Length: 259
Length: 232
Image (cartoon, rainbow over all chains, first blue to last red; front, side):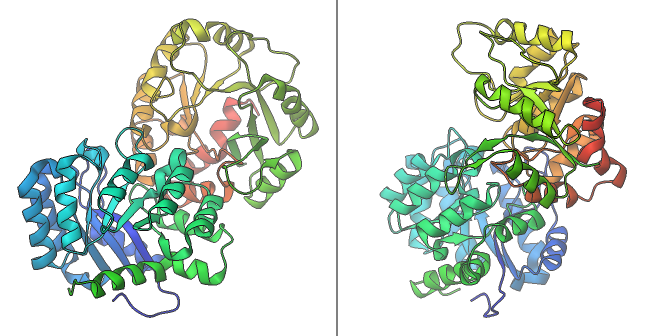
């Protein structure tokens, strides 16, 4: 699926394109350079552009940008559930025709909570396509762990990744939430404490903790130093840095998806 | 000289051990190659004696900030280098300007900067600190955590309008946004901070160094700005 190297490294949360509404932009070339510098074999990548009317074009640009290095990226669609059937159609086309590996749904960018009926419709489509959904978490109005829990309960067959593990203010409750919902994984970016990464591994098992950078919101070097400082066992460290991501994606393929 | 402009003497991230004491702090600073640190109060004025003793015991490394409460704003003792960290709550019966006036007046009289917590919805959101910066223009206000990632752009926006506002980088993770702050003319008011023991000084220093800044600007952020602010 991704590779079999013992030192396999996967960044489960990155962006390219833009500019985003907060003015950030990052090219695939820039991201690749950072990945090479830090021995990242592959990265989950989603459009940085968070303005829904531009997202069809953002996906086209992403597909073009990664065409020459397709084996390095696991593209995730970035869609706004408020666009209803259109968003569902886009997801289906991106997964089935373009080989996208998942969906990134940002409740705070879309201003819609994860358990909203409009969101459920798009996320049910993701479940039926057997692709995981990465939800940047930690926004204190739209993506608190309690809110993601409501979604995890409603769609228990859907694989959810709590991106940025709730960030600084909500990390511990995000771990609690994931402990209660086995369909929830945690991605490590932006939350600053190495001790909390270790805590997540102890509570959930390393197989449900995925390394991520959220680049350009975070940086690969500092996020990797954070994992180094977490005092994980070698096996757990290798799992967090890549093996867990590989296992997750393999399980989804064996569950029905073939691309 | 590298100065961490935002550490505490004790605390816990809610898992693992509670870190406590000057020796642990100094060891963490040594490990990260940090020469000195602003040691700020957190939530209890009873901690002030310990903070002042830390500054006395390591006068060239630890620079104590007093925790003051608006309802009892007494600065006891000498040797303080600033005031804070202050968490401005929501729901007070008084406007922030009124609530903070006694502390701001002390800061102005003693020529001490005030470190304000920031980064959450509430009066800790950076734009809601603007009235304080405008009302007390002779006080230097430090936006702790630079608004965290959520409100970092607001912190930069505030800094561009208010020359008496600084920010420390603890909790702000994006090199791109750091560069945006520099491009916006704020390079001389950005302070490296780690928020130890909550976050890790080694990781937080790496965030600054991996941003690939102009070396002169990196030196400003990692220590020269704090040195100037603290009259070191």
